[in-house]
Length: 332
Image 1 (cartoon, rainbow, N blue to C red):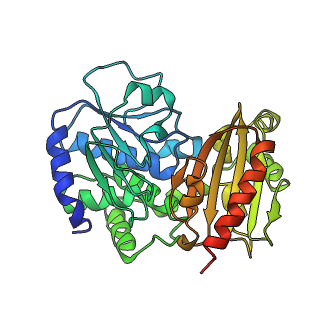
Image 2: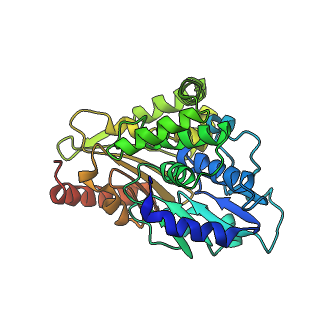
């Protein structure tokens, strides 16, 4: 079995949701692992007959580059799903319950079950399927589906491949193991298509996204002997470049990719709040703990936070915390 330690909880989950009306919920500003995991779990629960009345729900709309991975899966955002008191929440790829966003969080304050791989997850559901060694939530789901001989069609396989490929940086991050490649190979047998996935994800950028990237790269700054690189965006830039907030996905990776940089950061001010994304080259840097200083969390090499304040006031504190963190967690 790929995930023997989760087998009992997964069996308990299948029994608990049998015949129930479910909403498979992901985090706000969804990425590939979030959308892929939602689509896959929803489709398997419907196709297996365990919970035919299952839909996907997100606070935000599905990003443009991810829409082709949904197929005919019933997918809603917070204002398109009719209110049904009996419908219960199952969370995927959510490090915390409040990561779903305000509208969805208010509507579904309790979680029947969750599947996740984030190091900072506090096990917030009644049934918790958490494996922090997994490279992606989609890897956990794919392994559990295979372990329990559940039906995987081509759309489901492609969604699971999407989650694994994007959360591993195309199989480059430290969480990738032999199990990752074995499971991915099995998904290809069920219809996953890496070539088509790559085309849909990486060969369809807009000119406006390129303009946003130019503006972001122009803001890059280096601190602490070049070990920190950070870039910023203000709220007006989206209007200037005719882009959406989803177009900022992946910008933080440019800060990490520079030789000599140990922590890369993307900081953005929005209506009195600051959103931060942190990246490191290896898990030894534990940027999840750095994000925790600002009320966030995530993975050891990829984390984020949201906090109140103005960027000009926040930046000195941020630089001070990063300096202390670099001293405590030197690159190995």
